[in-house]
Length: 276
Image: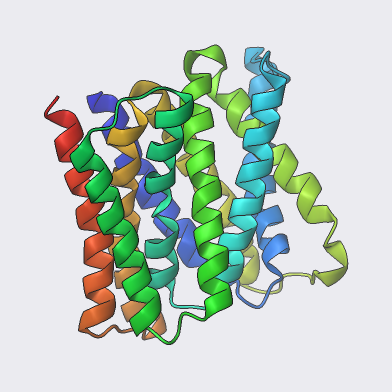
């Protein structure tokens, strides 16, 4: 359990830097950014899988494929929204995903969810709608896309938890990369060649994504969904700092209040869950 929490903290830190690079690459088509992120990870883990004789196909092909599709679509939507609204807002709204992961884990994995946990999840969802209502930089389309992205991430969390010890964690990650690479290539006509420092950014987003993905996947294999998923909200702290110092993004009281409700609801959910 403790290792799962530590791994999620590491994943949150590396994903925060990946999100920052995605913001810097806002002049690129979002599916091209997905390609950079997936390819940068694939070129490292696929040779390693072959060397270590890690199964490439796996045994649960349907669930691995579904995880790959959901992750690809979710990431594409997230990168699109990151380009259009403040970084902190995008991260905060997307990480309502544990709301959906807990719900899906309850119905499909039969994980127990207490009454007060449901109240906490509702609290987080209210916080998300407060953010949308008071921050006019969050347009309706972006809000719908980011919430749908969160729903898909919730499905990914539940699937990864289901696969657990059934599949090697690198097999799970590799499906995500392959589906993302193939899916993003359908939009190649909208791409352009990176120039100058952009090459560092496009390479960095893949490496950071690899580190974050490994620790994220291992975290879900070592601890239950309801406990480790909310810890990923540490990304929000980093995103707010990055947004303020690097992009001049600031927030009034009510958007911060909405973000606070989102985080508070998830932290209370963890606390109630751990009380047994």
